[in-house]
Image 1 (tube, rainbow, N blue to C red):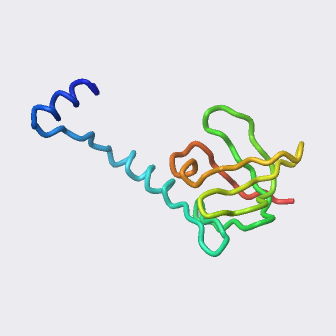
Image 2 (cartoon, rainbow, N blue to C red):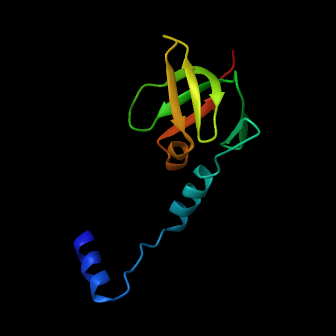
Length: 107
């Protein structure tokens, strides 16, 4: 498919773009609303801040991670795992792409 695209691009013919189905488009919009403002993370229609207890799930089949948000940077957040006190860095783009999901956790 990429070879065909390159050939069409070289020949000067327009390349057709993939059309997203409405269900795919709405799914993408809901996960792309992730931002950091004033040291807080906006994700899944909720605000997260430092010392928030969270549950993070890896969509590639990794184990669930229980921990606490220790730092919120410009493009990433740091989570300290509850079990072994190791730290995990997750970028905003990973939330936007759907690689990770996060939920608040009660004590």
